Amino acid sequence: MNGLKITLLMLGLLLLFSGVGYLVGGQNGMVMAFILACGMNLFSYWYSDRMVLKMYRAREITEGDHPRLYRTVQRVTTQAVLPMPKVCIVPSKAPNAFATGRNAEHAAVAVTEGLLEILNEDELEGVIGHEIAHIQNKDMLIGTIAATFAGAIAILGSIARWGAIFGGYGGRDDNRGGGFGLLVAAIVAPLAAIIIQMAISRQREYKADAESGRITGKYEALATALEKLHRAPVRMKLDQRPASAHLMIMNSLSGKGLSSLFSTHPPVEKRIEKLQKLYQQSIYQGYAG
Image 1 (tube, rainbow, N blue to C red):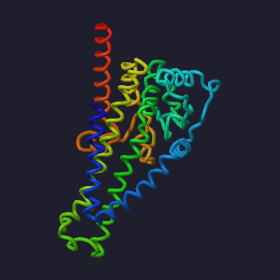
Image 2: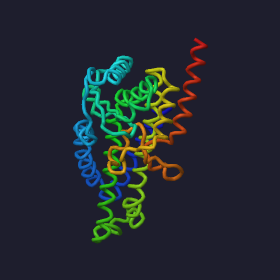
Image 3: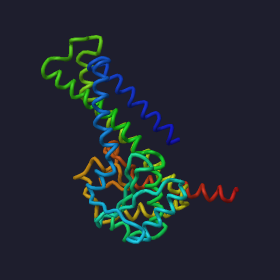
Image 4: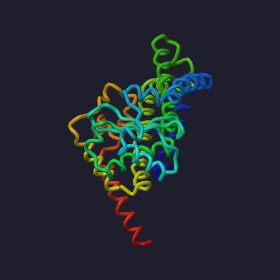
């Protein structure tokens, strides 16, 4: 079901981009905006692991540096049948974790010192399973594709706004929507693109939670870990690094109500509820088997 939702959301981004491109500059404008967005996001995608790890001052470790963490990552990676990623520790008391890298061969899993202090063995394994699931599901690639389309729509929206200011757009081609088309291209479409992009991110978080349980069998432990992280008094300074907020297992910027539309993560309560349901299903299937 998550896969279908993500496919529909990605299709929505594609259709939105096509429509806005036509409204602003026809086929040529659409192609130019897409090429520009691709260039920006491909650079980020290719160098993401180095940039993010450096941003958070993450230190790569070996088994001898921190046996507990290294062996947990090794165990979960083996269960997921993936290459061993880099294992890093972030010098922060805020409990959090993230995975980065353009593919499984160039991946890294990082956790903070604060997370290692508050989670027990099973909870740590559940969290690592979540991050390994992101690598397994190629979430960095999916996120980059979504960001490319959202970025291209934002570029087209900027072109439309500048065109309106200098009189280069609007009214010139009534067949492309005139003033209403300008309004859609400049304001409505970029906003809709952000909402769709964030919805894709939230669905990836749900899927990574579920995959973590499937890989490790630690549905309940992951739910407990999320509760601990949610209630932790110390937070990562994600407001200073919004570009990397979607990578974290716990985003302090997550909101409720209308603000949740712009959140990269689902509400913790819903994630825990889904994990508990999956745990009950796994027990039932075990009995049935």
